[in-house]
Image (tube, rainbow, N blue to C red; front, side):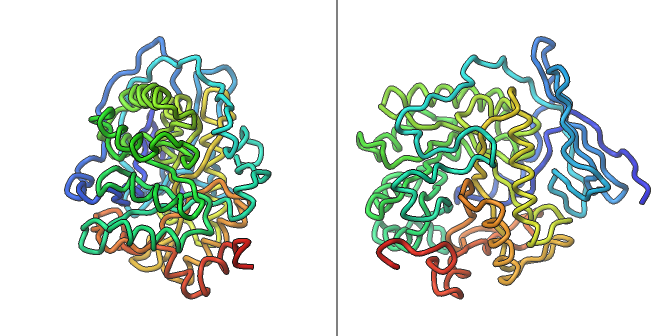
Length: 414
C-alpha cells in the first residue's frame, strides 16, 4: 500500500475511549470536548514531539516520539510489523498543537513508605504488583472499575454497593471515578468489609479542596484501604484541561492529602497516547496511570488485546523523563456487544478472548479491568460504536460460574 504522510505534528492524539462516560452528570458535555487549546511551547522547556504517519485511509502506520533529551528518539511502531500506538477508526484522528509544558520538578524518585508497598517496582516486567504481599497473595492482583449507578442513573444505596463489591472480591482493588452519589464513602465502606483496596478518584478538578475532603472524610483517618488517589480522568484527552493545569492540580492535591495523613500514590489518569504526547502527566504523578483499550484500534483483534496493551504500557514508560517510570494500566477490557470497529468486533466470545489475552500478558496484575458491570445508564456517542453499555465483566463471569473461575478462588472458597 502506498502511504502518504497525512499528519505530522506535536500531537495530542484523540483516544476514542473518551466515549467511556464515568460521571453520569457529564453526558451532554463529553462529545463537545475533543481538542486542547493551541498554545506555543516555551523554548526553555524540554518537549517531546510525537510524530504520526497516517495512510490514505486515515489509519496510523507509524508513531515516533522525538525527545529533546540527547539520543532518546523512541520508535514505537513499524508499518511492516503491524504494531500501532494510536487508536483509530474509519476517520483520521484530529491533530492539535501541544500545550505548553511546565518545568519539571525535582520529584522524580517516588518515596517508599509502607503505604506504597503494594505498588510495582520501576519498569522491568511491566510494573507488576508486589506478589510477596500477604494481602495480595490471597486474591488476584488485578483491579476492577466500578460505578455506583442504577440503570436510570440514580444512586445505589449502601446495601446495593455492598452487594456489588462482594461479587468483586477476587480483585485486589476497586476503582471509582468521582465523589457524587457519596461513592467515596459507600465504596470505601464496602471495600473494607471485603478486605479490598480502593483506587479513589476525582472526575473533575475545578474545586479540588472541597472534593478531596469527601475522600478524606471517607478515609476517616485510616488510609490503609487506599491504593491510589487519582486527580482527574482523561482531562487532557477530552480537552477540558491543559497538561499544565492538570499537573499543577496534582501537586496541590498531593500537598492536601499529605497534610491529611495520606502517604500513598497521587496520580492523574489519561489515555496512553496523551501520556506519550505529554509525559509530564506521568513525571509529576507517583506512577503513570494510563487507560488503554485495544478495541478502539480498528486493526486489533481480541486475541491481541494483551500484547497491544503491554506494548503501550512500555511506550508510556519510555516517553517519561528517565525512560523507566512505573506504569499501571488503569482501564482495559473489551465490549460484549455493539458495532464492529474494523477488525475489533464486540461479542461475549471476543470479550472472553480479550480477557484471557490480557491475563496472559499481565500474569501478575498491573491492570484495572473495565468494568465490573454493564453500565446501562450510559449513552453512546460518535466514537463508542454502540458499545458503551456493554463492557461489564460480570456477565462474562456468570457464564463461567463466577469470578472464581475467571480470576481464581479466595482461600475461603478453595
